[in-house]
Length: 248
View 1 (tube, rainbow, N blue to C red):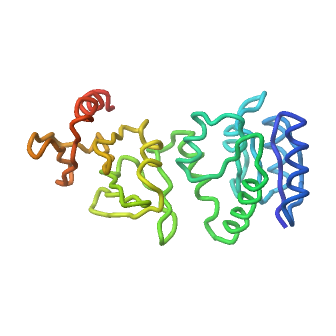
View 2 (view 1 turned 180 degrees about the horizontal axis):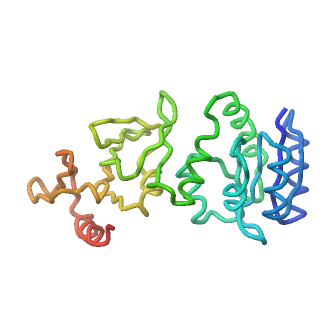
View 3 (view 1 turned 135 degrees about the horizontal axis):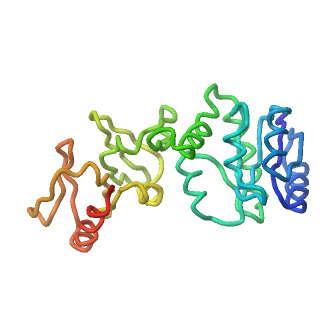
């Protein structure tokens, strides 16, 4: 049985989600319905739920404030939102689930089933801790990467370059490590574009902070700090130099 709390500021939204869970998701019990940040924090601390459906934008604040202030992050979270905005990028960065409103029944059922699977794992809520750490800015941003062996949390500064590998992506890291991750390069281009990463070629995404020098040979390429090279296509060269100027 999944003990569940819904934090949603619209009464109709709370009731709709409660009814959908009751009708379409087996073994889910609703422990509390909350409409504010304070109510959400108090209910989570009291009920110790397995799962929280958390609206990103609340009239009294936002869902991230709830996560920052609860006593224990020992539950799963599925975010809900009416807008695919900047917050969604932060959620994807930490490999967490979200549902766009109006909520699709099949997506809701899938999110609940994924929660059941993660609850079986000892480190099921590391992604949530990662998100909260990133929001608070306590450490260098970390991205959650799902590999064949499990989930790794990698500092963005430790990523040298990414290389397309069909529907997979190869990550080349400081220290010579390589990870193969089961998402395509476009997915990571979207996630990392705000963190000084630039796609120099259709097959390559590089960390601009890891660039050592640019070479004109062979049509143009960059040499990275690990000694590896990455191609720079002619149509992307001018924007690459602009991106280098802007890199912090």
